[in-house]
Image 1 (cartoon, rainbow, N blue to C red):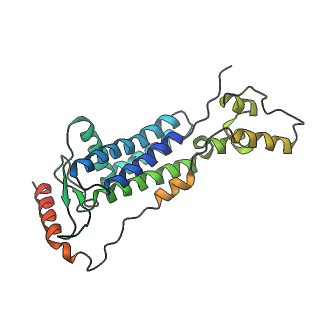
Image 2 (image 1 turned 135 degrees about the vertical axis):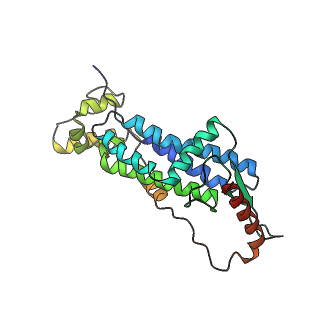
Length: 254
């Protein structure tokens, strides 16, 4: 008998959290080389989110149409396209070009970096912005897409949702199918009388055997928003910022 396989976005969640991890690490470094290392890792993890999403959900009814709409939305988003092409460039062609600027002279202000001088021009939404901030904003977009997928296909995206009365019914499975999918003998939970209370206990027991997608963590990533600049707070940084801005403009208007 062929074993049923429960689909899940656990690997997608892992890559999404990994991308956020590297985006946060970008902001901690001062040296350009270290920023590039973290950026390359971020780009790879972020790209894996959509790859794994398509792979896991490819056989789910209705997903291809849903994904086509998401793909068109991403293709119409200049920032998303820029990150996609930047990942392809970093993986296959060479070194990503960035421009760094430090804090006020004599202070311990951290360095920040901006995109400039790459094969593709920086889109207006990312131009003159801190790279770490741009990356975290991209993670938020991906997180919102993953949440939308979970809302559209709740029982195909999370095992703990699938292992329920409604989930089994929607997926066209039996309790024995679920037991088999988890690598357990069919009938492993069959004890006592098959009344409603006993069935609820069986589902609860099986849910303890699976890892659920951390929706709370994904939702937290999806709510990230860039910080607003505080008026008057950058006067002491004018020289450093102006030099960086001039270099970015020169590279982007090459």
